Amino acid sequence: MTGNPMSYTEEQAQILVEALPYIREYYGKTLLVKYGGAAMIDDSLKQKVCQDIVLMHYVGMRPILVHGGGPEVSEVMRRLGKEPAFVNGLRVTDEETMEIVEMVLAGKTNKGIVASINQQGGKAVGLSGKDANLIVAEKAQSSVDLGFVGEVKEINTEILDTLASGGFIPVISSVAIGSNGES
Image 1: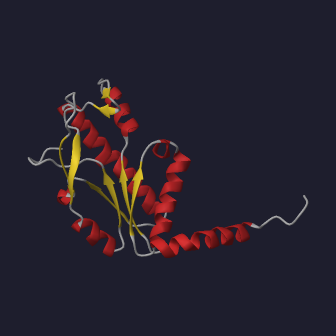
Image 2 (image 1 turned 90 degrees about the vertical axis):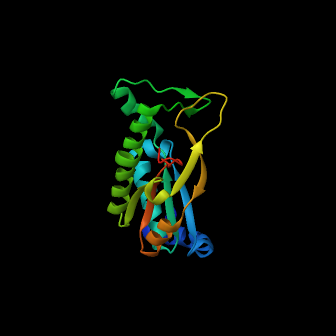
Image 3 (image 1 turned 120 degrees about the horizontal axis):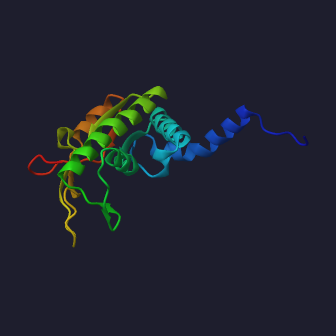
């Protein structure tokens, strides 16, 4: 080898120096992180996302993670003998599909993310949009009836503020509550 390559410790120090302006800018601020797509499918990316969320918390930011999980929902639907249907990239969600969506997102997917963040040294708490009426939605208007697909109308942040002030990292599944208590 030629030259004097950086040791791992020097490389880490350089990364922190480069990150310092961002840490200063976002210190004490609440940051909403949307988590979905390939980062939810690849196990190494899952771990890195959770590490980054914990790092954000430890350097004084207040991350809130909101996740989807469409591929997991589709996989469970197929295992249960139900073929997913989409219109313009949106899942057609009848009552049975909504039950599966809620089971997968608010259950399996959410709790897996929470466990991963906790394994990285964070204190994550899993929620759905139905908890404390966190996310209130109404039926989405479309040229095709998409069923239980909604548009967010209100976010009630009180529970998020309470959790963040206690040092917890909220992890929220994208299941909202309708005006009549429906998902």
